[in-house]
Each structure stands twice: as structure tokens, then as C-alpha cells.
Length: 390
Image (cartoon, rainbow, N blue to C red; front, side):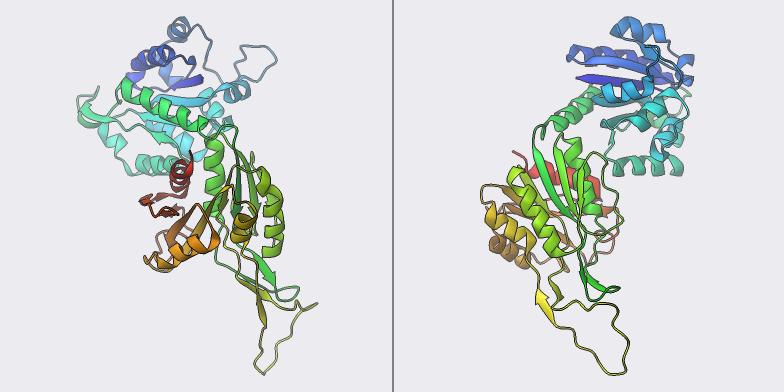
């Protein structure tokens, strides 16, 4: 596998040479990129001698004339590892700043990222650095936390670069995850549906689409081909996914049935409206003093219909429940004929709707259950896919 090792300006930069060697012993090809500050501690010649590969520094450097190195290297890398990572570099990664070769490659790369911080304990524990690390965690960046110890300035505390063995282990975990769904096709339904009342009004569900978008990104990180059938929402779906936009439950069902036969794993994360108006009024219903009745009819149960017509597929449903009681979710699991169902408690306002975080409980048809714990939606998505993958 191809490992791009980024080295930033910490006293611990010298230990990156040992990490490069350890990764090569594991059979990986290693290229290195240094920040300007890193050159105060180590040199490109050191890493080029160790790896027999070029080392990049300047944002405009082109080892192959006429080729944009930051794009070529971003595409080349199977994983990007930044060790040591300073507070400055961590902030750049969190906020998408691209003002040198390393940060530019990081912004251009879709490869998974492993970050091993190293700095003074006060800097590591600062509010700004912890906020940046939290942002990285929501992007599924693997953080190899520093350890307690004496640092270069003489202070003692958490800030010392993790061991080379721990960083190398984190890289192997990320690379193994990247291969876990390689060659597989994952179909995801996501977001709400909108059921028109007239030309300007509709019935819908309270769904941001963020969980479905997180599952799509997680599946891509695990090497899958991804199709998302997405109802109307502002959720940002990955560019690498095939996103099919729909509006109504019937449109979502049509597209889901179309893509289901070629999918290896199907996840119904959409909040499909259970009912739609029996008749859609042309134009606009006008306000009247009298009360108004709206006749509703049942919508198709999208994930149940897909499961009925694709018995051999592994199909995972979602259940947004207003309490911790699992009885309704268990009934849905059996009624819809699913492999498993992921339950989240929407009465907990710190997770779920519009939040960047969630907490899932997975119930399998066998009766087995497991819990994700409270984490980012992307973290929950990775946990979910790892739990249901063979």
C-alpha cells in the first residue's frame, strides 16, 4: 500500500524516520512531505535515503515536470499519516487551510487520514487545539493521542508523540478498514421525502439527511462503490457517490428497486413519510375561515418492499424512536424482514435530527444487540458498517 508521511515542525520530527522505516518493514511504499518548519529538525535527504522515494516540501515543487505534485501525490496515497502533527498543522487540517505542500495535499486527498499530535501539554490541552481535534474526529480522522511524559521544554504531561508501534498500528487499522468493502456495492436511502399537498405545500418528516450522508462517506472510506437515493435535504453527500435525487416516497421506491439487485448491502436510512395526500391539488389551496380536512393514504414502505423483492440481500433498516423502548423497533425488524435495524432515540436532543452526533443500538434478526456509544455520525456510520460487514 502507498503511505504518504507528513512531518511537521515538532522536536519529535526525528522520530518520523523510525516510523517511515517501520511502515516499510510492513511492506508499504512510503513517500514523505515536510513542512518548512520540519526542515529545522530533519532534512529531505534523510527521508529520501531511507525510503528511496522523493520528498516534497514546497507547494510549487514538481518532481515530474509539468505534473501537479499535490494532485498526483494525493491520488497516489492509500493513507495520509501526519506524525508528528503540530497545533498549527492540526488547525490547518481542521479548517481546510492549504498554504504549503503538506496541507495542500491533505485538502486534495480523499485518502483516510491518521494524525499523531506532538506538542507542549498546555498547547495540546488548549481550547483551540481540542476544538480542532474534535472537528477532525467528525471527519473520521484517526487520532493517535500523545502520551504523558517529559517534553522538550522540560514540562511534563500529555503531549509526547505516541510510540512508533502505536502509530503504525493505527495505520494498519485504517488500511484494513479501507479494504473491508472493496469490490462491494452499497445502496443507501437517505433524507426525508416530500408528499405534495398542492404546488407550494407538502407533508414531510424531520430529517436532515446527515446520517445517510455519513454512511455514504463511511462506505467510501471502506472501499465500496456507493449509490445514494436522496430525498430533499441540504446534506452534503460525497462527490464520489452516485447520488440519485428524488422527492416522494414512490419515487424513492422506484429508484431503490432499480438499484437493489446489483447491491451487496442495502441500508434504509431515509425518513420516508408514512402517508401522502390522496389528491394533490393543482395550484394553491386558499385559506378559508372554515376548518379543512386532508384525506391521507398510506405510502409504500420502501425498505420493506425492497426486502420483499431482494430476499438474498443483506438489508439494514433504521428506526427513530421517541424513547429507549426497543419493542417497536423489534417489531419493525420482524415485519419488514430485515437483517438488522439501527435504533436511535430521537427524544435525546443531543443526537439525531440536525445534530452532528448520534448514538445507535443495532438489533439483529438473531436477537443479538450492540451499541455504538455516543459519537459523531461518521463514527456511528463506520461502526454500523463494520458491525454488519462479513
